[in-house]
Image 1 (tube, rainbow, N blue to C red):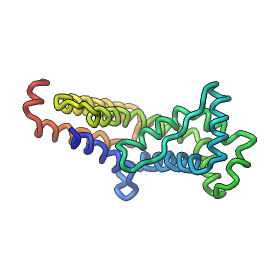
Image 2: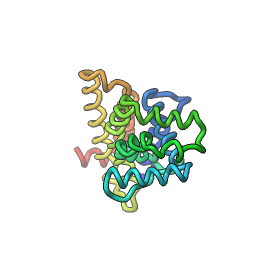
Image 3: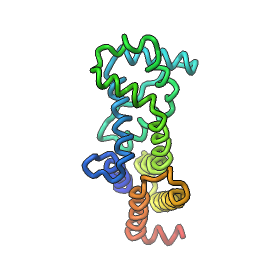
Image 4: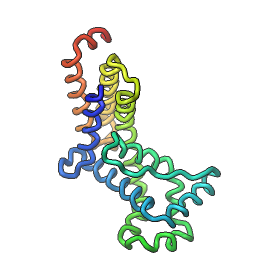
Length: 207
């Protein structure tokens, strides 16, 4: 089961890997997500301002954007989900009167990138698309690497991922704006086939 979770996690890494470049739009989007996280988390005054902006915007205590930890499965997806959740707060942050002062110690190009990424409507659409595509994969990883995973859960999870991939491919054929994740879908199908071959008894029981 750990191997099944690891296989899915490796797919995440491949998506984020610039050298492999399987899904260019996803790689670019995830790179920007990590830069937003690194820039804000790496500047204490900016973090303090971000907490205040969250409290004023959401009327509740602010939360930290997760930091990237390479050894944690699907961490990039978790960061993406939180960044998307805090979209309005991030927009308010870069437009706050105290932003320039709070971010004064950040290099000018990174400060400019932060503003540009957050104010780009197309960027937020890419985030929504990535979360839609990868959320079921992240959920499967979470279940398969949990404290009490069951062997019988492996095949159903892969079946669900295969169906998700097929549904997404169907949507790709009818909605051009969803283009860009063919590799994810084909990879999920291949993973399903491997699981079928590796666990024939489980497959038979599920069917």
